[in-house]
Length: 317
Image (cartoon, rainbow, N blue to C red; front, side):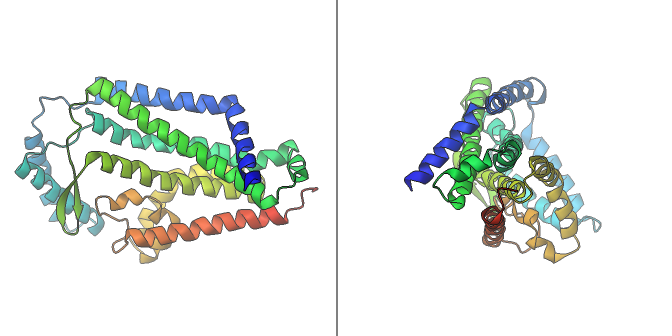
């Protein structure tokens, strides 16, 4: 155990010694700060907006869409639930959380997890592949630690890096959101559709669930990139494939899901667990338990492939 901890510490030192790592952290903070400031200047919803009138107008549009036979059932299900949430807001006088609030910006900033995924994929892809390209893999093999421990230390250090970036994003977005928009909206509840009815939840718990579930998608993509890097010893292939699937995987799976139920077994139908926060899964009938099981299966397959190939690989070659 002590040797594994030492290996993880060594891998962490490798990551944070690189100038590129600090550039990534700097870019992350700058993106959050700049995004919040630009949103407050150009994208924020004015406080004078009649939100009740907006919701009434939205509800009328939802009702028209629900009566349209050409609209897919998946979209109708989403709109039906949003319609009930809007009606609950009007009945209980609960204003929607807009981007021009602390919570609104913190939720919007969760989209930046995509950049964290990109940054961590780069680190994961180069973690093993660079050892082969630089020839330093032979030096690692001289150590008494097993190949399994060496590979595990690289993977764990990469995941730690991803979680550090995620924590930086959450803290920075809340701080800058409070500074720019004020902290007066802290007690606003989140409305969700669950078990056929609208329920109120603590907004902080909702935000943490968004970031927490977003980290699942982050970890899965990083694990995939790590596996490709280990199996093919190519960081460029791992980065390229991971980026392509990041942007296209969910969209392609959604199209398939409109025609075939077996789409629910595809990784990208399950990778976004935030779809269950408001009860709108990509494929009708899917549950969070099912998606978690599928993700665990993919996670095990990716890591077993990495471990098996790395353990059997001829380092001398």
